[in-house]
Image 1 (cartoon, each protein chain N blue to C red):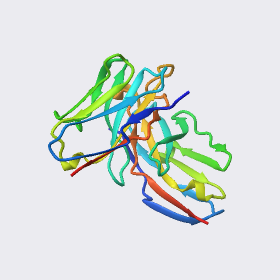
Image 2: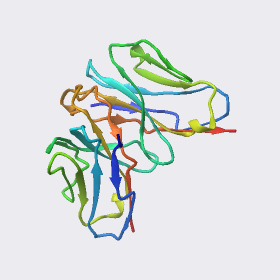
Image 3: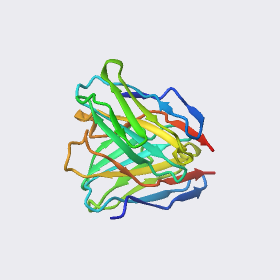
Image 4: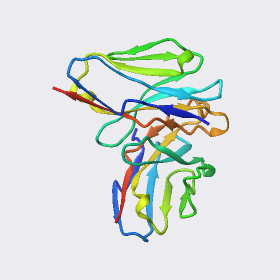
Length: 116
Length: 117
């Protein structure tokens, strides 16, 4: 069985602060993929990044960066110099393939509020 | 290229009524997923179609729930004899078959929010 835990329910920061969203996962599969999605108030989940279990290189995309550490089963997401438009709910998700037919297992989500 | 479209966006119904939601995936995608999201939680998987074949159903999908994808294009999710516990956001996602099921990126619609009174 797969499990994703996002221990931070809500985070509140002031604009321009850096913020890190934590994600810890559990799976017995050796091949799996991790994802981050953003859910703005409109409700649509927006894909942000995908990472496979064999690639532990950190990734940076503009103000976003991701730190994948297989040893601690974590896939954390950092927003640098946060902006009000970053306010949303962020979900970490796991897809272990195998017999799961590609279904995503999501964490509970972290509500990020960026104040001006 | 339009994204995943879901209709209606909101549905209010009385307990015991039947409701049907529609999902139109991205046109070239042959994989389609339904998820349910309750307040303060992440989406939970309900069912998966590859073309018109329903390949997996979650235990969450009780006998009152049925999903179809008759021609491998749009999909419908029907809930019969709705209960207050069915109140949730119902999300549809689609993906292409160019990559493995584990690797593929699922693209989501904006969801249908169901309120059962």
